[in-house]
Length: 207
Image (cartoon, rainbow, N blue to C red; front, side, top):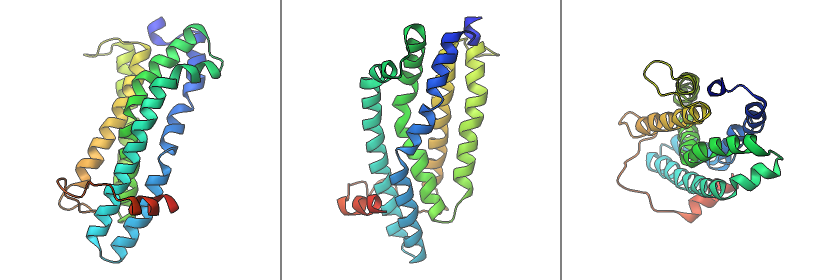
């Protein structure tokens, strides 16, 4: 029954981790909100290049911050769990989950920023569909990996974390692919414009 997450230690770990997936996306709100504002302004001025620049700078800043979050999470995850007063097997379960999900922070940041940029350009559907994809992958792949359903291996607790990480990675990949389409609301080129622009990033943070 342990593979089906029955026991007080699982409930204790889940109680802590219920907050982690909500906290991490909020860390990238600065890049996402700033991107929406600057992209919408550029689109209103019919400045396609400005919209693309704002989106790329927001992605650079958001994913750079996410990389720092991921590294900090891997280094400080266990002390954080101890500070939350989890002990024994519950603490180990919480760490196993964080160790799988936290490295995907850049995917979470990319999803947030790209959805915000597209929303600023008038595309409000793509972000909604991406979030639905996160939930769909999480709700199907996670339980399948927990229980070993169909062709999937039985991974127990770690299956939940893999389902969550896969949901964010899938949504980020879909949104990035949509961003670079010819008919994207924000027309971007993959090969150019990826050098950091401190002034643009300052504008993002001020907003």
